[in-house]
Image (cartoon, one colour):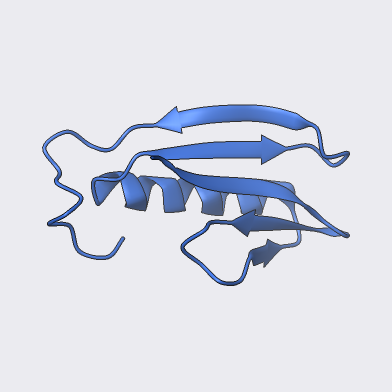
Length: 82
């Protein structure tokens, strides 16, 4: 099952959430939150994990959903931390 990483509004800020982390990462701009989520997705992919990146608009509507497959040749069971 893929790991879902989401970017969504959080009051006046933007939050990046991932089930592997207890707390959300908060950013002042949506662009910075999206960049952080893309970086996190790449790290998980390199560690052999498939991710789904969800981006939401300020009103909460889904703006985009991207499937980001694990890099070939990586075994998630043998991977170290992302």
